[in-house]
Structures are given as structure tokens and as C-alpha cells.
Image (cartoon, rainbow, N blue to C red):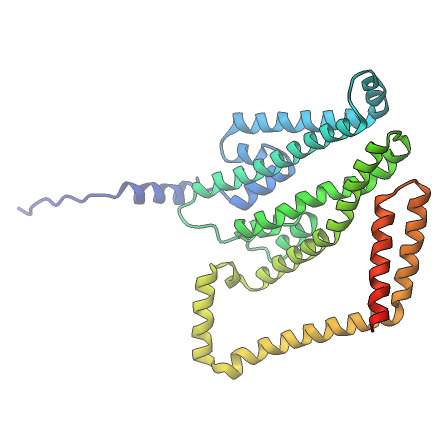
Length: 315
């Protein structure tokens, strides 16, 4: 009679096989996207219904209060004139409320992504659609990186997305609020905020373009989703197998083509839009802002024009 053999099963392997067969694994990209579009919906997708409904309630209250502040802005300001608060204090309070809402929106999406990642037996390798991450990064910087399975890179670009969500309202709201300001301190405070927004806007725009380019590049080459160390080792192996001629020269050609395109674009822009064209635009902008009784930004424009004129004289 054959002897009985005892087989010990690993509980982790059992749970993994059950998740693979039943389908309990969640898609982190889908969870992140759902919470990004509707707060809490990613949590509901992950099975956290109570938390998801709570986040959705926060979203409704945030947008309702934000809409009420915009609609009844003049009434709120006139009502608070009897209270010892300046115009700047009210704007700072509204800005803090807006910041908390945006930060919670990003947190809710990141929470959904991390929760979905923990349900998976294997690391998330990104979506298979090659164009969806590029489009999503065009809408919100960093979104496409999460769809590609690169959360660290996505958080980096999301920081600039949050900065953009502050800069765009500032550029539109301050010119609208400016005529209602009476105190010099309030005018100087808002002018400082506007100057910071104008200075940071090119950087945010550049990061937005880089986010789109990175999402597209990773979509075209799925190997770029791997870790940097693994990619570096793989590149060394490819050089050993193919040689320097077939592996390095194509990359150098691509870099040279991009460099030549950049030089051609700068030359063309300099020919059609010389420096005196931008100087005239800045002079006109300084005059218009001075007529609006602004002080700080016209002063910065004047300093910039003086520096550029000194550089031209040195040449």
C-alpha cells in the first residue's frame, strides 16, 4: 500500500491564484482616472464604497461653496467691510480654501491608485492603449504617466499641474478684481501674486509639454516603463550585441536632428520677430499696466528692458 504524502500549500500562492481566476485584481490606472474625474469613484471601484461616497460629498461641497463665493463675491466683500478684515485677508482665505480642495482632489486620486496597486499579484505595467496616456497628459500633466504605470513621475508632473490650476485663475481673476481695490496694501499684495504667476507660467507650460512628450515616448517604447537601472543594463547589453555603430549612431542622429530643428526654429523666430518687436510689446504692456495704477509689474518690466539694453550696448 503506497504511503500518503503531505503537500504544504503556500497561502500567498493560493490567494494569488484565486485573485487571478476570480478577477479581484484592480486596474490602478482606471481607479486613478475615476477619482480624478469624480472624487471617490475610484474608491468605490476598489470596494471602499463608504469612503468613496464621503469623498464625493466633499467634492460636491467644495464646488458648491466655490460657486457661491464667485457668484456672491461683491456681497461677501461688502458684508465683511464692518469686520476688521482687509481685502487681502479675504483673498488669502479663499486661496487657502481653493488650495485645500485641489490638494484633496489629488490625494483622492493617489489614494485610489495605491489601493488598487495593493490588490495586484504583479506590478502594474500600464495601459495597452498607445494614445490614451498622451491625450490624458494633454488634459492634465501627470495623468498619462499614471496610465503608463509610472506613479513617481506622475506625481512630479502633478505638482506642476496644481501650480497651473493656481496660475490660470490668478491671471483671469486679478484683472477682474483689480478695479474694486481701494487700499494700496491690497493692490500691492495682488500685484505680487500676479507677478509670481507670470514668472512661473513659462515653467508650468514647459512641464506640460514635457509631460505630453514623455507620455508619448513611453507609449511608443514600452520598455521605458521599466526601472532606470534595468533600462541601463539593457542598453549596455544592446551595445555589446549590436555594436556602437548600429546602436549609438542612430541616437546621435536623432539628437542632432532635434538640435537642428531647434536652431532653425529660433533663427526663424528671430528673423520674423526681432528683439525690437518684443521690446515694443513690453513697452506697450508697461504703459497699459501703469494706467491701471500698477507699480510692481511695470517696474519689473522696466528693469528687464534696462538689462537687455545694457547687454546690447556691450555687444
